[in-house]
Length: 451
Image (tube, rainbow, N blue to C red; front, side, top):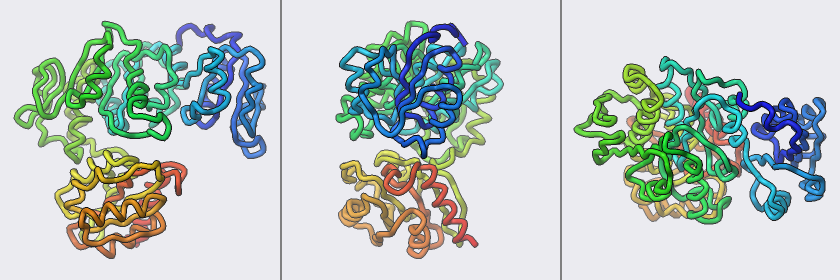
């Protein structure tokens, strides 16, 4: 850990707990900062706050009083989920107080180089691929962020013999000032989280902060086929490393004659890659580029691509019953992710979709519903999805309570050879705490069906 004393004596307000706020509070306390924690959940229901109180951290729970800023505060560490409309955040910005997320702490403390991956879709798959590809490279990869341990916790013990590979969201990146990965990967940009960011432009600006502090010695791995990504990366000082599934980009990763290449070197035949779905080829190219830039061996990369079949909740094969194959794509929290999932199969599809209503429609799914024989909808958006399925001419359309009850309904409408696909196109928070919980409940329902 570099410069252990940089936070000593600082007065820090940690706003919002959950995993990131809890970890940041403990870390800063160990480093000698004076911490005040503020969380909306009442203390009597807040086990994390109670634990922090026991180690001597001041805790204020149940509301967000702006009076917490009456005493001097050097900076605020904000949980990514806390919106910028929060009264403390608004007041802090007006007073010129820095508001950061914990990945900023990770960047300031880590001795290890960092690979950071962002994008509207594909982050988890790409991050997992990179971690696996870097194994045996001479520097042990450590996974951090949304799919692993909180990044600042990992950074505390990481050394120059490690590489931190972290998935980062727009929520996290928006709260950065000096965040500085060695390799920044930007996969794609589509409409998402507009309820948080307000506009697509602001969403893109938040994502682009992944490039903000890169130098000529760093690398920006970008999707050459996404005009928004290319535009947002145009001001970076880093060396641009493009990837493309449709055109040869000699200084990056690409596919030519059904073979994956990196900077002219043949890596693997597309036929040998077991990860399903054409959309995953973009994730593969990004991972190949980032891992080779950081010392991965071609042998390890090909081994991973010949065996890696996906991550849980992302086009995860669950099982087969009477010729029907079940897939869990609960991590598909927007229409683009569901589009990608629908293009991954040639067989007829029974689609299970629905969830949190963020105000958007689903007309962008219409061209992708041609192979869909039935749609089972649930959650706040079920009526919207019913209308979309009707316009698309889907043969069977049903509404149901949730992802679990949809399983039996889907099975009843399916035939041998069909794919039954949970790909909700929506966030889970109307009915489930996380997309993982939604996917686990779906898997459990399939287990009961199998019995």
